[in-house]
Length: 304
Image 1 (cartoon, rainbow, N blue to C red):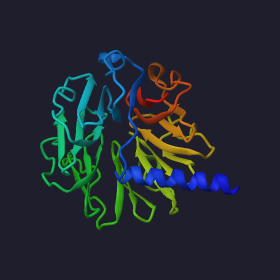
Image 2 (cartoon, helix red, strand yellow; image 1 turned 90 degrees about the horizontal axis):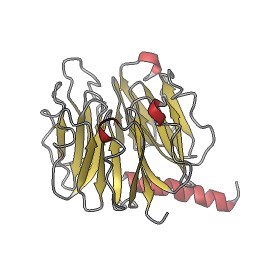
Image 3 (cartoon, rainbow, N blue to C red; image 1 turned 180 degrees about the vertical axis):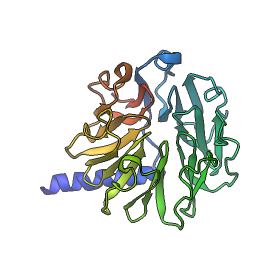
Image 4 (cartoon, rainbow, N blue to C red; image 1 turned 60 degrees about the vertical axis):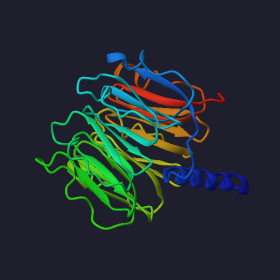
């Protein structure tokens, strides 16, 4: 690797880590959607070019603009759209595959709304020191400023309980029956149900920079921009992973995955419900992706 590509790779990694830490405001853009239009998932997507974050659930989606305002669209059977908090100052959003949503404001407080059948909304902790949120299918995770992990929801079945003890965590993600965290030393830890190797097949190594949990599989991105996948492969969500380097973002929610390459293009693989994979836009400079149940959402940079 010559000096040019070495410097480029190091800068790419640095940007990923800085964005993950929330030190830089994300690049704004417009919403691009494809796949199922159930409940207006495509036709009701918001317009405008000031969006900085997105999240997709099973049948609904959320977007966050640069003022920190939340917009929701899609199925609203459990108020997972209409129940969104109003006002400005929100910095993170996430949407569950099972009809509930989360948001984090700049004061470190978590807001939850939508389906509360397993207390994943009503048991939301009231601390004001959270830095990360993750919405699983029936549970949620929060990362506090002291780098400890909090889990709530689905106490009846004990999903993802107990959370790993101690400090030193910098990112979190939650699936259906398993959870994963990225430690400050760039190693991974998974916990919960070990069905189909979700826990035992977690890769080792100390060069990971991003993580994402689907319903029954997991993804991790290493510092070379290579994607690692494990767990259920019933829709090719593991074996279909691209094998080359240069990826800078990964995302999954149910059974299909999206990734952004350093050239700004989107790669999609896994379950192809109503074009959620095959209708992926071919060109553009994309800065965020969020796959849902049978639909996909992306942010395209405004200078495209």
